Length: 159
Image (cartoon, rainbow, N blue to C red; front, side, top):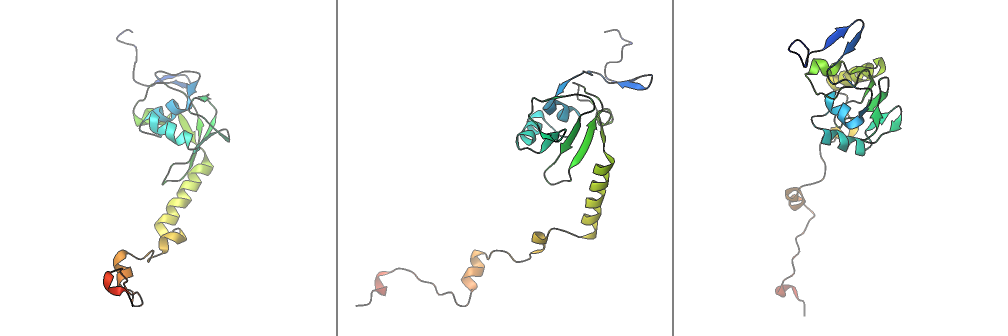
């Protein structure tokens, strides 16, 4: 590699962008890691195994090969789901701006995330989260008026 060859920066060739490490096909778990959806490939593989990742509306395996143009649905725990279109494949995990060039989020997905953020902001939550009192604690059970303690002891025998 010559000193003038870019090895970590994105280069522009006409209207097509090339990224370092760009390839034609790439494993799904590796692409999710490179695109910075998950911190490690192992976390990406776990989410795939749980069925939270779909490619082209089909449940995928970690070894599934992605190609540019594939549609990936990502349901992350604790957050809204995202639908992205694969724009490029790279084997090198770079900075976030470079990772954002690998995909494009669909307008429907953006709208869905904004609606969910608005509901959270307005305080509209799940009905189960509004339950203030749940199962009684051990202390609560002791303080119940009708609850009479019983213990087995030798003095309790009636003759």
